[in-house]
Image 1 (cartoon, helix red, strand yellow):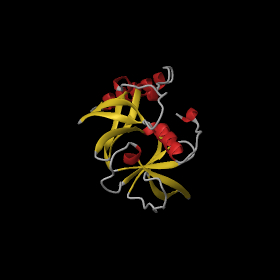
Image 2: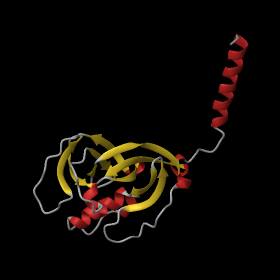
Image 3: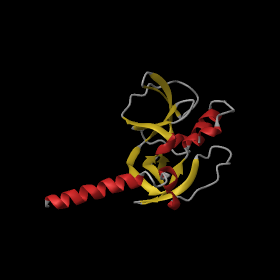
Image 4: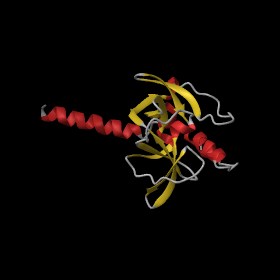
Length: 179
């Protein structure tokens, strides 16, 4: 590269940078979805990263006695103790082994959902997600489907999973505005 080529390239980069301030801001959340491809109870699912505040592996979970099979126990996160629920059990699947991964659901009250495998992170156009209605009753935590490498995966809605946990624990209200 000659000095003139470098000068021309720098001028182009400066012009592109300046032009970026005149263009409308992109709506990344509207155009794309960040997803985690996971496995719970031996079945493939996806989680929206926008609904999670963290993902952890091999975090110690202290078991608690109680009637809820889905409640694995509690775990510490940044000085807070959170309940940990098995996603496979919430979805009605048998739980073959103790889950390795924990996803912290965004919003309040805080809770963690445990799952068995992490297959990868994907950024997909929002237009390829087949959405389903939110107004479902009962224990349904699935909201849509997404084609990912290896097949189509149902999408677990973390706010809906929190609502199911509230139903299991006898709480009748939760904030749906956090979706």
